[in-house]
Amino acid sequence: MQINSSIFKAYDVRGLYPQEFDEDAAYRIAKATARFLNAKRMLIAMDNRDSSQKLKEAVMRGLGEEDVEMIDAGVATTPMFYFAAYDSQADGGIMVTASHNPPQYNGLKIVGKTAMPIGEASGLPAIKELACADTPETQKTDAVPNVQGADFLAKYVDFLTRGVRAPKMRIAVDAACGPAGMIVDAVSKRLGIEIIPLCFAPCVVRVHEADPLKDANTRDLAEAIVAQKADMGVALDGDGDRAFFFDSEGKRVPSHAIASVIAKELLERHGAGAVITDVRMPKVLHETAAKSGGTMIESRVGHAFIKKLMREHNALFGAELSGHFYFRDFWGMDSGIMMMMRVLAVLEKTGKTIKELTRPYCVRAQSGELNFTVADKASAIAKLKAAFADGKQQELDGLTIIYPTWWCNVRPSNTEPFLRVNIEADAQEELARVKTRIEQVITA
Image (cartoon, rainbow, N blue to C red; front, top):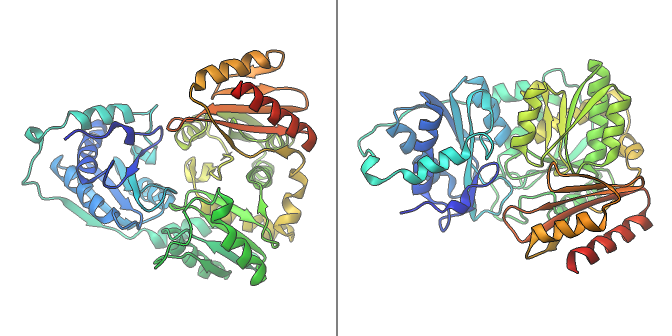
């Protein structure tokens, strides 16, 4: 049986279970990963989807047939998985998760030594080739997995809360029915924070998808903040590697604004350092970092690309518009709860509310990510290049067009017939004008 090649994404493996991604695929990919890494000892973990246990058992069988010793970290968020993979000094790791995708999906996140993510630019195509070449003739059936259980939760909570002083406040937290709830619960008890829990596992009913980037998935949180008089809110995604923040009125705090607060804090504390951003990031983060002695480095969108740059440049901090935040003191990795800890520390230090902290960084008009359905994405981008030929253009990731009072980034989706467009302008009226013009060019 052939593996469905569509499950191999830019940063991980992901697909509908069991139609696209099943136990056989997990088993073969695990075997291929062990061969690719020449691994003797690997860490495994999983999220709490209904299908994750069976898929993890398939991963264990595959690794066992390659004579790999396994450390089973049990149920974890993706950042906790990174922590455990690094802390255990394993040769690599595999986590069963589909991140923020709906419950009917599942997949694998794969890391090498020091928890370095393996994606399309760092070995995933080679793993795919090895997995697809695996046949019944090359498979063993008598291997006995060598598995050692390990509980990393207490050590991870120690790591997250080290040096953190939190203000006395009420925080509404939506954990999207994922493993993040157990970590938030432990962290809040350690720091003496009052948590209003929403969608903490186990969830009898999943009231919304696990992607807090979509406003539809954070309405319950916004309502709870107001109804229960919380000081702020935090929405975590399904595997806990992203975080979005909300003020006491239940209004979303833009990711670029909260990133600017933390970049300024870290740069002022350390004196200098590199800050990594994706190509969609609004200009205010660049301006803030420059004023605070930082060096800005742009990256392609995606955690595997940013993590590589974080390590190459020993970067202090990194941020994506999608709610990923990266830290040098987390080995260049991203963690939603670690960002929550950083925000709490600044709130305690300044005595300000999150709205007061971020207001100075909300200075321009943003479109958010717009999706345009386009059959020929390359042709549409070529038309945009020609239509805006008098502007500065960059092609690090898709097409970035820059004018003195506005700029935009246009990227083709890897998996859908979409062009993803982000626009920023000095004024709302200009943003509307530019959006209309871009739409006219794309659809002409």
